[in-house]
Amino acid sequence: EEQLLAEARRLLLFEASGPLEPHRAAVRTEHGLEGRSRNACSLLAGNGYWDPDLCLSFRNLFLETGRFAAAAGLQAVVAEATSTALQEGAYGLPPVHAGAEPMKAHLDVFSGALWIGLESMTGSEKNADPCQVPPLICSPLGPLEVLLKLKTVFPCHFLNLSFEATDFQDDKQGGAVHSAREARSVAQQDMLLRTSLGNNLNAATRLCNDGKTPRGLLQAASDPFLLQAPKVVLFRGPAEEGYPFLPENEQVLINVLVTGRPNVRPML
Image (cartoon, rainbow, N blue to C red; front, side, top):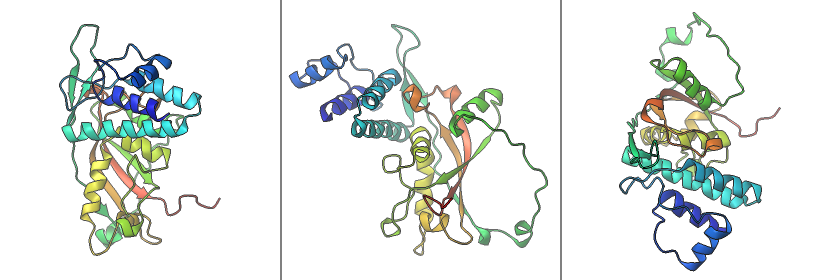
């Protein structure tokens, strides 16, 4: 299992062409990977790109054969690719047809954050009545899939999304919102694997002082804060498609309002 996961990481993140060690060749033959060569999101080297079909193949293989530890390890590989893209401000895209060169997509990342609490508001704002209630639309899709759909309908609109963080570090360790690699919540993993929200959360952590932490502010029993994360970019597709990187014209710019759930498992 460890060898197979290591081969998945090599194939998805680094150049894998050239002679192989015997044990690597055996692993690839056993699982039908002989034809795979360099294809990955090797964003640090030339014209590499992420192969969502290969990622999906590994994901299905791990889940269907009960290799759940390897499936969790594959999520870490996806997170590594996301981090690399955010650091580089760009990522590769597969060629549009055979023989064509891979393309590059730019990623404009904004790392700002704004803490908002009752102490930030005036008296009139606290007592304001809502003037208009937005319509309620129910959908079987997840929040990020809804955003991708809305992008096609309203390509020039700026979209807002609320996100409830559930997994945090202990306050003694800084109380930061857990990253995609550390979070247990599937929703939190998905948000941080597919968007640039992690950069905004890091900025929010740096803004905390006087012993305050993101966990303490977001999960306060009374008058909790919320966090405004502006200009977050959705730039990856869902797990069911192998976490593909999106072309620039399909990226979605969103404003995220982050709240904290006081209890991970609230009483029902």
